[in-house]
Structure formats: structure tokens, C-alpha cells
Image (cartoon, rainbow, N blue to C red; front, top):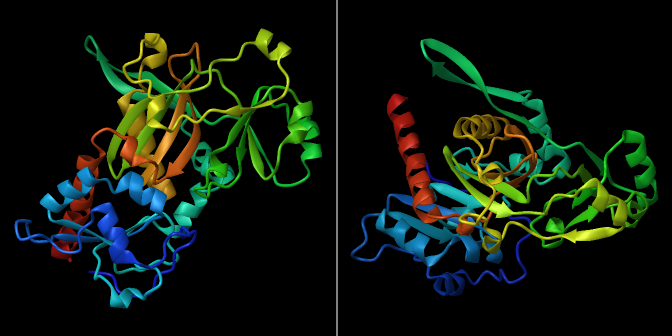
Length: 354
């Protein structure tokens, strides 16, 4: 079933002036298959900000998609959908309403849930799976071995009155240093500005609404786990170095937290301590991805995971991001096109069963 109806997009970029054809040509997108292209099997309407279009809809992805019969068409947000398409899939970063007749990636209410740093980690805590065991065979005996323990850092949310932050932090017993993160993730650069606070007095200088999260030493390496449907890809990123108690006693203030999402922060291939560089075990990641897909109701997201330094199996999920920068993920164009084709195949199989 293809989509017809109305659509509204939140947070549309200022340069989205409705001149769809000009923008499509700039991006090298195609509105119809060329004579040498295979028949179109899947029409994907997309409603993305200009920044997301440039990072995601790269020429390599578009060429591969076209070779497999996948056509990307921009949704004109100023026109009714009944005059556009029809679409098999709508791909969006912000989408105004649901439509039961189309595969929508992903539901707006589910996206809203992970755009709030307070609610995004509630689902991880609610999993109630701090210890994950895998089956193994030792000699003639089948045994269960601990693969990993997963939790979230302690955190507090503040929406008003920064002067109360030091008192509340003391009252709740949060340990310094603390990572300060904007409460809402709205895609803006400001929503990704993180800070590390070394003393309680300086906490009053922060600007709510925000989340304060206990910093966990993790060897300066973070694992970004990309999820596209049932596919999982893990990459290493450099992160903040560990903070020792001696250093903590000498430093005061709030300092900017360098971003680790950019490809230049990649730690893959770096000369790292093997205990720090070792990726989380695949069974653990598969369990987390499966459970979070079901609980979040999302198919396109990534999880930021750290391993507490000095441990082998204690992991913390510190962030969940909807529709992350897949363009920074190796071979993303192959993975994403196969994912889109799998959606169409699944839809076809459901029709046969019905």
C-alpha cells in the first residue's frame, strides 16, 4: 500500500523553500529511473533537513539504491501528499502525523521519546537486565557464563532555578565529576553541547533545562552501536580521558565536552590497550538491540555505550540517538539499501499470508 494524504514537518530548515527540483539536482537525486536502470521496486519519500540530506543521501548511496530499483523522492512539505508520490516508505527525521497505509520510519511519538534525555534512558533501566548470561560448553557440561551487565549512570534532571543544583546534587549523593547535557535533543548544535563539571559550586552556572549524569571512567573510548532494523554495526570513538581523585581535587569549573560523533574521532585502528579496545560481546549487543527496538518502537537509532574502566563486563548506556549520522558508518549505503528492500519483502510476505 502506498501513501496518500497530508504531511507536516517540524523543524524544517530555513533554506527549504519548496524548490524541490532545484534541490534534487544539487544533491544528484533522480525523479525517475534512467533507461538503463531496473524498474523501480521501491519509492522512498524523504522529509529531512538539509543537513541530514547532505550527510545521509550521498552519491554512493543514491547510485547503489538506483541499481537495486530504489527511488528517493523529496516530500514537498508545502503540498498535500495526495499530489505527490505515491510512496512505499516515508523516511523522515521529524514527521507530523501517522498514516496506517505506509511504512513510516519511524513513528513520531517514538522519536519524541528519545529526543528527551530523561525518558530515553528510562527504557534501558526498565529492561531490568543488569546481568546477561550466554550459554557455553565446558567439557561435557553446558554452563551459563556472564557476558555483561548493562545499566545507566545515575542522573538528575533540572528544568528551572540553577541555584538549586548544588544542593540537589549533594542531597541525592551524585558523585563528581558530572556530565551536563541539554534535556532536549532537537537536532541543533546546542542540543549536543556537553560539559564536564568538576565542583558543586560551578554547577549553579549551568543553564537548565538539563540532565546531570555521573561521569564513569571508561578508558577514553566510547562504543557507538548503529542499528538499522536487525543490522548492528559497532565503531569505536575517542572520548574524555579518565578522571582520577587527585586530579578532581585540583580542578574546579565547568568545561566543554568534545564531541565524539564525528568520524575524525574514530578510535578504530588506534594503538589502544586491548582491555579498553575490546568491543562489547555480540550476544549482549544483539539482546540490547532487540529489546530496545521493541521497547522504543524504532528501527533507526544508535546507542552510545561505555565500559567502566577496570572491569571486563560492566557497561553503561549513556545516550540513544534517533537517525544518527549513518554517513559516518562504514558501508552504510549497502546496509541501508538492503534494509529498505527487506521492508518491501516483509510487506509482500504479509500480503501473501493474508
